[in-house]
Image (tube, rainbow, N blue to C red; front, side):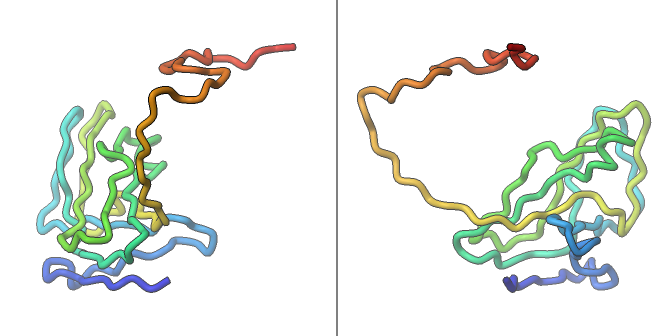
Length: 151
């Protein structure tokens, strides 16, 4: 699949998103910031990536956290996955939050998130008077318990 990408002026020296390995599902997104910044514990910030996309109709670009940032520093994306719709043409920005105990430095070119291209469907809703029964029913928010049932 080919996706049109626009590198914005403030990212001219940064590489375009790329897969780090042959088997990677996500492409690395980089911080296209002019000056180093520090994300304090509990703080959130929208970091520009310096790119805009023309995602094909029927697809979305999902912005997701990087597992190493989450585990090692407590850095994650607030609205995860963030969706880049096929009709959006603005700059992709990543909303980061620091759940860690120490400030996290973000420098120009830091890998801040990953982006996955995914197919999606449009649904048509059919209003009904009653939904079909299931074993689970309306149970949610922990209703299936924390542990598997032993036989």
